[in-house]
Each structure stands twice: as C-alpha cells, then as structure tokens.
Image (cartoon, rainbow, N blue to C red; front, side, top):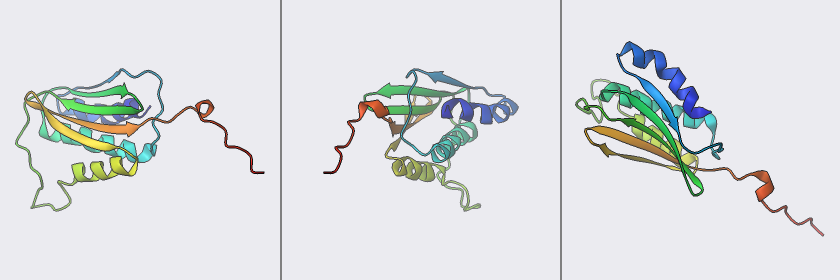
Length: 141
C-alpha cells in the first residue's frame, strides 16, 4: 500500500526531527488507478513539505468518496514561515507544483488548504474498477 510505504520511508527522518508520522486508513481495500511510482513521489513531496515547514505530528490519511480516493497529508502543528520558492537555491520550492502535475497526470488533482494553524494537502485520485464490474466488449462480427 502506497500510504504505508510512504510513512515507513519517512519514519526515520521524522523521528530524527523530533516528530511523528502515522497512517489512518479509512477506505477499506481499494485500488487507485494510478502510476504507483509517480504517486509515491507526490506523497514524498507532501511529507517533505510538512516536515520542513510545519510542526507536530504528520498524519497520512486515506478517505474514499464515490469513485475517488483522497490521500491527505496533514500537519496540525504551528507552521514555520512558508517559503514559496528559495531564490538562493533554484532547485527548491517546486514540490507542490511537481505534485500537482503528478496528480493531474494520473487523472487526479491536488488540493491544499489551511487546517487550524497547520496545513492539509490532499491528492484526489481515481479508483480502479474491479475487472468483473466492467462489461465484456462484444466480439467483432
């Protein structure tokens, strides 16, 4: 599962920063219709932003609604000063733009908003349909 793998990849870094990271999965056994490598990269970007710019525990949540799934990274702590772009290092400050592009490339979107004093960033992604739920195409005559 992408959410658990992302959490495990970041556990040592969050712990070294005196923070915690956890997953709360509320959508059962679902499969998103996405490129796992690209969505893993998008989750890494969101977790990196939460670690760098926020404070407090980082939560990665999964919610299902209709034919979509939300992968939400929240950081309810007091945010540090947010830099939209680090002009001293032009390689920095592009994470959200890249994440938005990755989400769109997988048929989804990125939604970012304030949550109390922290931030919430959601990847809204399409669910895959079970093969047996699709009608078989008619054979060519």
